[in-house]
Image (cartoon, rainbow, N blue to C red; front, side, top):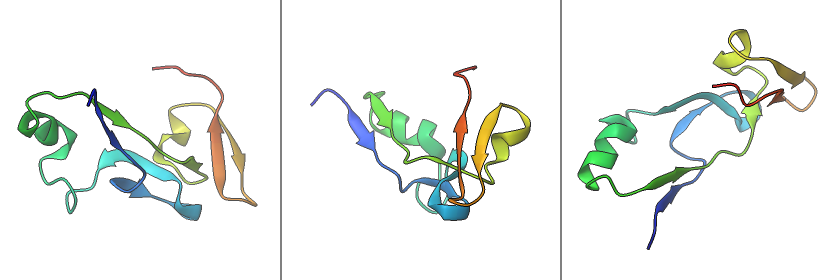
Length: 80
């Protein structure tokens, strides 16, 4: 095993079940992803999401194209 993949169940979801906020929910990982990574002795993690919600909290920080009909959004760049 080279890494563990976290699928689309650990973060906050918004409209249409897309990512609202890309942080670990405390009911799933009480110590966050950092705590999980520590418990795994820094074993590599890969985090996955389906798509961004049309009401993601990141709309004011990054540029997105928003599809209000399907309740999804798409970032216009990979700015970090």
